[in-house]
Amino acid sequence: MISALVINLDHSSERLEFQRQQLGHLRIPMQRLTAVNSSDIRSDRYEQLANGWERKMRPAEVACFLSHKAAWQYVLDTGKPWLILEDDALLSHKTADILVALFSRISEVDYINLETRHRCKWISKKAEVFIAGYELRRLYQDRTGAAAYILFPSGAQKLLNRAQHSAPALADAFLCRSYELNAWQVYPAAAIQLDQCINYGLRPPVSFVSTITPQDNLKPRANNVYSSVRFKCRRLAAQIRMGWRQLSVLGCAQRMMVPIIKSDFEE
Image (tube, rainbow, N blue to C red; front, side, top):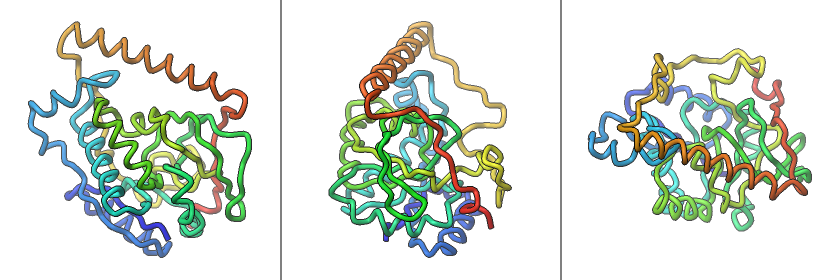
Protein backbone atom coordinates (compact mmCIF):
# COMPACT_ATOMS: atom_id res chain seq x y z
CA MET A 1 0.00 0.00 0.00
CA ILE A 2 1.03 3.59 -0.58
CA SER A 3 1.64 5.27 2.79
CA ALA A 4 0.46 8.76 3.80
CA LEU A 5 2.88 11.63 4.36
CA VAL A 6 1.04 14.17 6.53
CA ILE A 7 2.22 17.79 6.42
CA ASN A 8 1.67 19.18 9.92
CA LEU A 9 2.83 22.18 11.93
CA ASP A 10 4.33 21.49 15.35
CA HIS A 11 1.61 23.47 17.13
CA SER A 12 -1.27 21.83 15.22
CA SER A 13 -1.58 18.81 17.51
CA GLU A 14 -5.37 18.54 17.09
CA ARG A 15 -5.01 18.26 13.32
CA LEU A 16 -2.35 15.60 13.72
CA GLU A 17 -4.57 13.62 16.06
CA PHE A 18 -7.43 13.87 13.55
CA GLN A 19 -5.22 12.38 10.84
CA ARG A 20 -3.89 9.67 13.13
CA GLN A 21 -7.42 8.59 13.96
CA GLN A 22 -8.63 8.82 10.36
CA LEU A 23 -5.66 6.96 8.85
CA GLY A 24 -5.65 4.44 11.67
CA HIS A 25 -9.32 3.68 11.05
CA LEU A 26 -8.57 3.25 7.33
CA ARG A 27 -5.45 1.18 8.14
CA ILE A 28 -3.23 3.43 6.05
CA PRO A 29 0.40 3.70 7.29
CA MET A 30 1.35 7.26 8.14
CA GLN A 31 4.50 9.35 8.39
CA ARG A 32 4.47 12.92 9.69
CA LEU A 33 6.40 15.65 7.88
CA THR A 34 7.05 18.77 9.94
CA ALA A 35 5.59 21.73 8.10
CA VAL A 36 7.54 24.95 7.65
CA ASN A 37 6.31 27.58 10.08
CA SER A 38 5.97 31.08 8.66
CA SER A 39 7.44 32.51 11.87
CA ASP A 40 10.70 30.71 11.09
CA ILE A 41 11.13 32.49 7.74
CA ARG A 42 13.33 35.59 8.08
CA SER A 43 11.85 38.80 6.71
CA ASP A 44 14.52 39.14 4.01
CA ARG A 45 13.96 35.53 2.94
CA TYR A 46 10.21 36.10 2.88
CA GLU A 47 10.62 39.11 0.59
CA GLN A 48 12.84 37.04 -1.67
CA LEU A 49 10.21 34.28 -1.99
CA ALA A 50 6.89 36.12 -1.80
CA ASN A 51 7.02 38.39 -4.86
CA GLY A 52 7.35 36.01 -7.80
CA TRP A 53 3.74 34.92 -8.20
CA GLU A 54 0.60 36.72 -9.42
CA ARG A 55 0.27 38.71 -6.20
CA LYS A 56 2.37 39.04 -3.09
CA MET A 57 2.01 35.86 -1.08
CA ARG A 58 1.22 35.75 2.61
CA PRO A 59 3.96 34.39 4.90
CA ALA A 60 1.82 31.31 5.60
CA GLU A 61 1.39 30.71 1.85
CA VAL A 62 5.15 30.82 1.36
CA ALA A 63 5.56 28.39 4.24
CA CYS A 64 2.92 26.09 2.76
CA PHE A 65 4.75 26.00 -0.57
CA LEU A 66 8.05 25.22 1.16
CA SER A 67 6.33 22.44 3.10
CA HIS A 68 5.05 20.82 -0.08
CA LYS A 69 8.46 21.23 -1.67
CA ALA A 70 9.97 19.37 1.31
CA ALA A 71 7.39 16.62 0.74
CA TRP A 72 8.45 16.35 -2.93
CA GLN A 73 12.05 15.98 -1.81
CA TYR A 74 11.01 13.30 0.67
CA VAL A 75 9.28 11.32 -2.10
CA LEU A 76 12.37 11.56 -4.28
CA ASP A 77 14.73 10.59 -1.45
CA THR A 78 12.68 7.54 -0.46
CA GLY A 79 12.24 6.42 -4.05
CA LYS A 80 8.61 5.38 -3.66
CA PRO A 81 5.16 6.94 -4.06
CA TRP A 82 3.45 8.67 -1.14
CA LEU A 83 -0.02 10.03 -0.51
CA ILE A 84 0.77 13.62 0.43
CA LEU A 85 -1.86 14.96 2.80
CA GLU A 86 -2.49 18.34 4.31
CA ASP A 87 -3.70 17.79 7.85
CA ASP A 88 -7.28 18.95 7.17
CA ALA A 89 -7.96 16.44 4.37
CA LEU A 90 -11.01 14.22 4.77
CA LEU A 91 -10.71 10.85 3.03
CA SER A 92 -13.19 8.45 1.49
CA HIS A 93 -13.66 5.11 3.23
CA LYS A 94 -12.40 3.53 -0.01
CA THR A 95 -9.03 5.30 0.13
CA ALA A 96 -7.10 2.25 1.34
CA ASP A 97 -8.42 0.18 -1.57
CA ILE A 98 -7.50 3.01 -3.93
CA LEU A 99 -3.94 3.17 -2.59
CA VAL A 100 -3.47 -0.58 -2.96
CA ALA A 101 -4.78 -0.51 -6.53
CA LEU A 102 -2.57 2.42 -7.55
CA PHE A 103 0.68 1.20 -6.03
CA SER A 104 1.59 -0.79 -9.15
CA ARG A 105 1.47 2.26 -11.43
CA ILE A 106 4.85 3.65 -10.45
CA SER A 107 6.20 3.26 -14.01
CA GLU A 108 3.16 4.86 -15.65
CA VAL A 109 2.28 8.11 -13.88
CA ASP A 110 3.81 11.06 -12.01
CA TYR A 111 0.89 12.41 -10.02
CA ILE A 112 -2.64 11.36 -9.07
CA ASN A 113 -5.04 13.84 -7.48
CA LEU A 114 -7.57 12.37 -5.05
CA GLU A 115 -9.23 15.70 -4.24
CA THR A 116 -12.09 17.80 -5.52
CA ARG A 117 -12.86 21.34 -4.43
CA HIS A 118 -16.17 22.28 -6.04
CA ARG A 119 -14.54 23.68 -9.17
CA CYS A 120 -14.50 22.29 -12.68
CA LYS A 121 -11.45 20.48 -14.03
CA TRP A 122 -10.39 19.49 -17.53
CA ILE A 123 -10.20 15.71 -17.49
CA SER A 124 -10.13 13.02 -20.17
CA LYS A 125 -13.30 11.78 -21.79
CA LYS A 126 -11.98 8.24 -21.53
CA ALA A 127 -11.94 6.57 -18.14
CA GLU A 128 -10.38 3.46 -16.68
CA VAL A 129 -12.14 1.66 -13.84
CA PHE A 130 -9.55 0.44 -11.32
CA ILE A 131 -11.77 -0.48 -8.35
CA ALA A 132 -15.55 -0.77 -8.13
CA GLY A 133 -17.10 2.68 -8.39
CA TYR A 134 -13.86 4.58 -9.04
CA GLU A 135 -12.10 5.53 -12.27
CA LEU A 136 -8.85 7.12 -13.34
CA ARG A 137 -8.98 9.95 -15.86
CA ARG A 138 -6.15 12.01 -17.27
CA LEU A 139 -6.01 15.41 -15.58
CA TYR A 140 -5.18 18.15 -18.06
CA GLN A 141 -6.15 21.32 -16.19
CA ASP A 142 -6.93 21.86 -12.53
CA ARG A 143 -7.52 25.09 -10.63
CA THR A 144 -7.21 24.37 -6.92
CA GLY A 145 -6.45 21.63 -4.45
CA ALA A 146 -3.22 20.31 -2.89
CA ALA A 147 -4.69 18.58 0.15
CA ALA A 148 -4.51 14.97 -1.06
CA TYR A 149 -2.41 13.71 -3.96
CA ILE A 150 -0.24 10.72 -4.73
CA LEU A 151 3.21 11.72 -5.92
CA PHE A 152 5.57 9.27 -7.57
CA PRO A 153 9.36 9.76 -7.62
CA SER A 154 9.27 10.74 -11.30
CA GLY A 155 6.75 13.45 -10.51
CA ALA A 156 8.76 14.64 -7.51
CA GLN A 157 11.79 15.06 -9.74
CA LYS A 158 9.81 17.10 -12.27
CA LEU A 159 8.37 19.38 -9.58
CA LEU A 160 11.76 19.95 -7.96
CA ASN A 161 13.27 20.70 -11.38
CA ARG A 162 10.54 23.27 -11.98
CA ALA A 163 11.08 24.78 -8.53
CA GLN A 164 14.73 25.42 -9.40
CA HIS A 165 13.82 27.91 -12.12
CA SER A 166 10.29 29.01 -11.11
CA ALA A 167 9.33 31.30 -8.26
CA PRO A 168 7.26 29.94 -5.37
CA ALA A 169 3.49 30.07 -5.80
CA LEU A 170 0.47 28.85 -3.95
CA ALA A 171 1.14 25.12 -3.61
CA ASP A 172 -1.95 24.09 -5.56
CA ALA A 173 -1.28 26.67 -8.29
CA PHE A 174 2.27 25.38 -8.69
CA LEU A 175 0.98 21.83 -9.08
CA CYS A 176 -1.83 22.81 -11.44
CA ARG A 177 0.54 24.60 -13.81
CA SER A 178 3.16 21.86 -13.92
CA TYR A 179 1.92 20.61 -17.28
CA GLU A 180 4.97 18.40 -17.67
CA LEU A 181 3.46 16.04 -15.09
CA ASN A 182 1.75 12.89 -16.32
CA ALA A 183 -1.22 13.76 -14.12
CA TRP A 184 -4.40 11.81 -13.35
CA GLN A 185 -7.60 12.32 -11.36
CA VAL A 186 -9.43 9.79 -9.19
CA TYR A 187 -13.08 10.02 -10.28
CA PRO A 188 -15.24 10.38 -8.22
CA ALA A 189 -12.85 12.11 -5.85
CA ALA A 190 -11.66 10.32 -2.73
CA ALA A 191 -10.76 13.41 -0.68
CA ILE A 192 -12.01 16.87 0.20
CA GLN A 193 -10.77 19.46 2.66
CA LEU A 194 -12.84 19.92 5.78
CA ASP A 195 -13.85 23.43 4.74
CA GLN A 196 -15.56 21.89 1.68
CA CYS A 197 -17.87 19.57 3.61
CA ILE A 198 -20.77 22.01 3.40
CA ASN A 199 -20.50 22.11 -0.41
CA TYR A 200 -21.00 18.35 -0.56
CA GLY A 201 -23.75 18.04 2.04
CA LEU A 202 -21.49 16.56 4.70
CA ARG A 203 -21.19 17.39 8.37
CA PRO A 204 -17.52 18.01 9.15
CA PRO A 205 -16.26 15.57 11.79
CA VAL A 206 -14.10 18.32 13.29
CA SER A 207 -13.58 22.03 12.69
CA PHE A 208 -10.27 23.84 12.45
CA VAL A 209 -9.26 27.47 11.93
CA SER A 210 -7.27 27.90 8.73
CA THR A 211 -3.50 28.02 9.20
CA ILE A 212 -3.04 29.61 5.74
CA THR A 213 -5.70 32.30 5.40
CA PRO A 214 -6.07 34.71 8.33
CA GLN A 215 -9.55 35.49 9.58
CA ASP A 216 -9.39 39.03 8.19
CA ASN A 217 -8.32 37.55 4.81
CA LEU A 218 -6.20 40.61 3.97
CA LYS A 219 -3.64 40.09 1.23
CA PRO A 220 -0.22 41.79 1.49
CA ARG A 221 0.19 44.81 -0.74
CA ALA A 222 2.74 45.04 -3.50
CA ASN A 223 5.96 46.73 -2.40
CA ASN A 224 5.74 49.35 -5.14
CA VAL A 225 4.02 50.25 -8.43
CA TYR A 226 6.57 48.28 -10.45
CA SER A 227 5.82 45.13 -8.47
CA SER A 228 2.08 45.70 -8.85
CA VAL A 229 2.40 45.91 -12.63
CA ARG A 230 4.49 42.74 -12.70
CA PHE A 231 1.84 40.89 -10.69
CA LYS A 232 -0.84 41.93 -13.19
CA CYS A 233 1.31 40.84 -16.13
CA ARG A 234 1.88 37.45 -14.51
CA ARG A 235 -1.86 37.01 -13.95
CA LEU A 236 -2.53 37.80 -17.60
CA ALA A 237 0.19 35.43 -18.77
CA ALA A 238 -1.21 32.68 -16.55
CA GLN A 239 -4.70 33.13 -18.02
CA ILE A 240 -3.27 32.92 -21.52
CA ARG A 241 -1.37 29.71 -20.67
CA MET A 242 -4.50 28.14 -19.18
CA GLY A 243 -6.55 29.12 -22.21
CA TRP A 244 -3.98 27.66 -24.57
CA ARG A 245 -3.83 24.48 -22.50
CA GLN A 246 -7.59 24.06 -22.71
CA LEU A 247 -7.63 24.62 -26.46
CA SER A 248 -4.86 22.06 -26.93
CA VAL A 249 -6.83 19.27 -25.22
CA LEU A 250 -10.32 19.98 -26.57
CA GLY A 251 -10.36 16.79 -28.60
CA CYS A 252 -9.63 14.44 -25.73
CA ALA A 253 -10.81 16.29 -22.62
CA GLN A 254 -13.95 17.80 -21.15
CA ARG A 255 -14.58 20.44 -18.52
CA MET A 256 -16.55 18.97 -15.66
CA MET A 257 -17.09 18.97 -11.92
CA VAL A 258 -15.56 16.00 -10.12
CA PRO A 259 -18.16 14.64 -7.68
CA ILE A 260 -17.80 12.52 -4.57
CA ILE A 261 -19.72 9.46 -3.42
CA LYS A 262 -21.29 10.99 -0.35
CA SER A 263 -21.91 7.69 1.41
CA ASP A 264 -18.18 6.89 1.20
CA PHE A 265 -17.47 9.87 3.47
CA GLU A 266 -20.25 9.52 6.00
CA GLU A 267 -19.63 7.91 9.38
